[in-house]
Image (cartoon, rainbow, N blue to C red; front, side, top):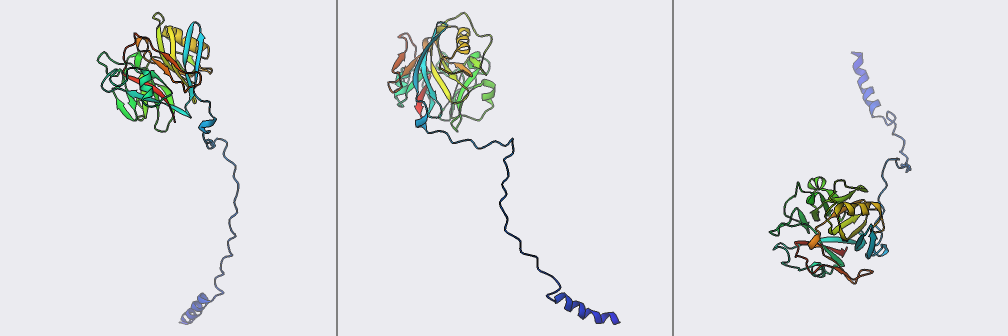
Length: 277
């Protein structure tokens, strides 16, 4: 039983301060500078102040016998709003000038197509409220102008817009004239009429306005071959034209005022109005 006598010795040695040495103190961490991975996107720079951007201006240019008149603007400082008349065409505003002045806008144009009964021919959204239903088959609804709740504006094909979250503002119209800097093929080429349209450079430059009587094919040719607004057009969308055509630009716009509306014009359902952000 001699092994029992060793137990006290083991217990004493376990309690001895010399049995376990404390770890050395950990030095404070030092900052290590690591390079950004080559494929990692850098943060987007803040948008420039609105005062540093080119203000809206009236433009006029004739290309292949077609005169383009309208207003060019930067979507970082200005935006479009949809003004709809739920009670039908002319129930609230008789023309673009009245509609624009009702919200102190800088310019206004007539916008989407409508049925003989006065309902929208397609979907629209005004201040986040959707109206009407999708025009899923006609070329008059093949394109969409929209603004997201975050303030980003774009022109999309109908199929892309249908699957997108509800925007804050939207007009469905058509046909698309230019997409990805190329003319849309198969456009009508024999029926000249006054046209109302939207042009976009794919970034922040926009133009809304009127083209003198021409076919849709000739209109797309002129836009694709030259620069009606002074820059290359990535996307162009045709809006309601003919007797609905109505363009108003206020004196507040450089080069304004301008009014292009025939005395034969008919009342319309809705408008697009240009306002500061």
